[in-house]
Image (cartoon, rainbow, N blue to C red; front, side):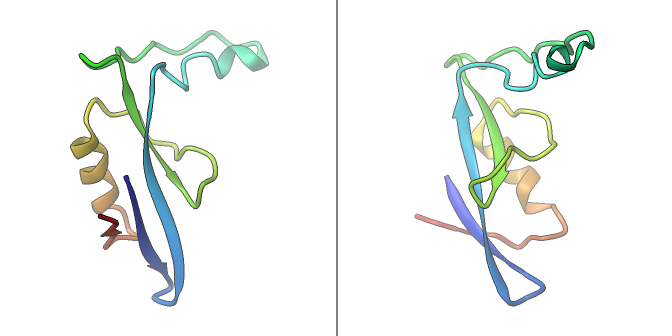
Length: 86
């Protein structure tokens, strides 16, 4: 799912909700020698949903079990409102 918002009311920025079949954040601490975080369980479809902006890195929010949860999180951020595509 993709959408857009206006930075400073003028610059068009993109936001995406993407699905992954694993907990993206689980192994990140181990990459620099720390203990791994607690793993987020996958939903019944074997997925977690993440938010990223402008096609870049995932934003620092927890994963979501449903697109609707991720969308609700995006819509209460300071950079909202979002115009969703489709």
